[in-house]
Image (cartoon, rainbow, N blue to C red; front, side, top):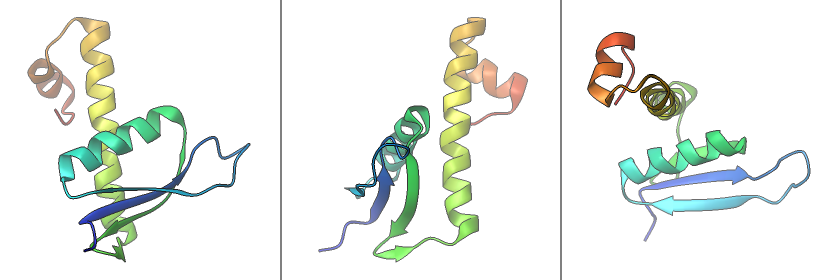
Length: 94
């Protein structure tokens, strides 16, 4: 059975060419994993849904949500705000 989502990536792309794959059926776990890859500076090679690579608009939308969640966490920690206040003040995803 094919996982609902899979991400192909390379950790430390400047020193490593090995491709790894993370598979999950949970879209929230996918966003959390993408957040970890973005923070680590990993190269995200592809995002697939049910074995088919997402087009650029779809993958950009998922990556934008992950990036906004990172920004929300950083702003909340730095400014002492809760996630709802950050969303109201900056318009970022919670």
